[in-house]
Image 1 (cartoon, one colour):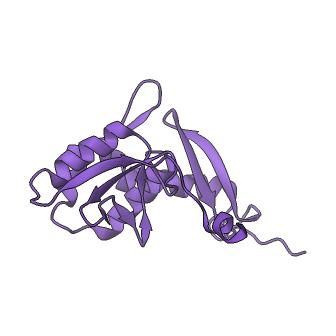
Image 2 (cartoon, helix red, strand yellow):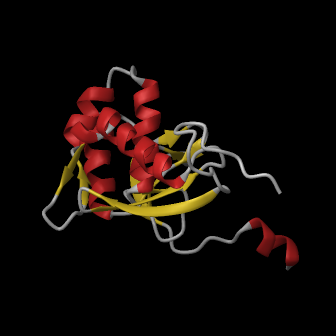
Length: 166
């Protein structure tokens, strides 16, 4: 089996696709390492992405718990621009555990219809892992809307494989 060198540093073995976890600025980061970079370069790429796209949106407590500056997020993105930066920021917020791709146990904002109002990254719907974040985001984004909306906590999810085997 041939092992490939990291495309970035050209020194270390890139290895397989896998989830990695590390600490940066006292924050726990859980992210995905692709099969083209070594683990060290993957960490460095994440740090560069954080510093270039997320640093001014995130406050870090002394305990290392990251929180989003939602008013800054709202004012920065309210004009509908900066889509690349927003996509990168959302991916970082998933890696920090502020958003989740999984609905169960998390929070969503839903308009009449029901129409999901949570942020999205590409076509993926993001769920708030913290009730306080969902409330603050909803107040900033939807307080002036004429339509009704509510925040829901998702307690049960039946996945496709469970439905089909029943």
